[in-house]
Amino acid sequence: MCKVSVIIPNYNHASFLEQRIESVLSQTFTDFEIIILDDCSKDESKSVLEKYRSNPKVSHIVYNETNSGSTFKQWSKGVALAKGEYIWIAESDDWCENKFLDVLVKGMENSEEYVIAFCQSYCIDDTNRILRITKHEKLEESIPGEKFIARKLLIGNTICNASMAIFKKKYFLNASNDLHNYKFAGDWLFWIRMCTHGNVFASGQVLNYYRTHLNNVSNKVYSSGKNFIEELDVLRQIKEEKIVDNNAIQAALLFKYRRFLAEKKSFSNDMVKNITEKFSGFFSTDFSFLQFRLKNRIKSYSKSLLK
Image (cartoon, rainbow, N blue to C red; front, side, top):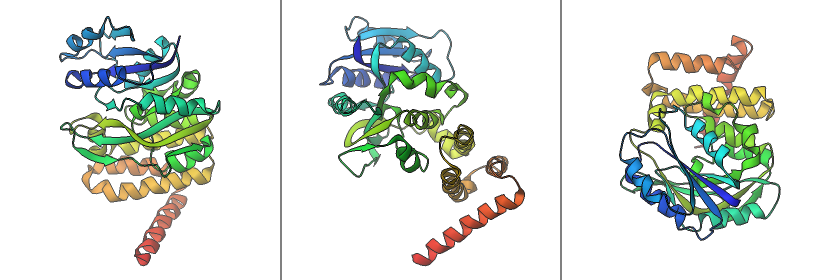
């Protein structure tokens, strides 16, 4: 047994793997195992991974014969192999400071009520240039799960990268049973569901380095508008599961609708039509959808007057 199971799901990240794995092995907190899952990579990943085959911290190296098509299937496979109380999904092209686990595990151990602990992240590109930094208002904070959903997840996803968080394994199945249906927004739904089981430990320390690529899935999804389709599907799922009240859903819809209006010029006509239909599906009549859109215009106009 161990305290933390570190799951490293990899696909074609041979050039980043050594830095990722070494940053885990160098942790000051040492009660962990490493589970490496390769999703049928076409690059030199296997030659890098096999260097760690005999490392005592590496409990599993598993190669898929065919690509799973879903990072969330890899999450589930890793958790099924995990022996730890806590899970860390350490993405294969990210890395971290050596006190990452020390800070987050100590935070989690402060209360039985914690189900997630997360830190802040540098978002970097392929050349290690810092693009942005996530921030938290306090150096440390305990946040009730319901409050965290309403203030930190529904209006923007504070846990924007899986590598910046650890979570309790025992709630994974309850929160992840249908994540494979999502290509992009499944992690957002996962964190929201996890928060229904307890509270969140937030660290203001920047301990994670999250890499974004020009051609990665996230950037392609955002540039096409597909992110709105999945995000609205997640909101509908949250509504059906009654995780939050209707006022919170309406606030999240309004936030996303305003983003959509700001970005839709870059989307295809068909995508704009599909996204608009997704929004209208939250309303019982065309008139109620019209009221929603007018509410957005009034808010926008009011803000412009204050500038």
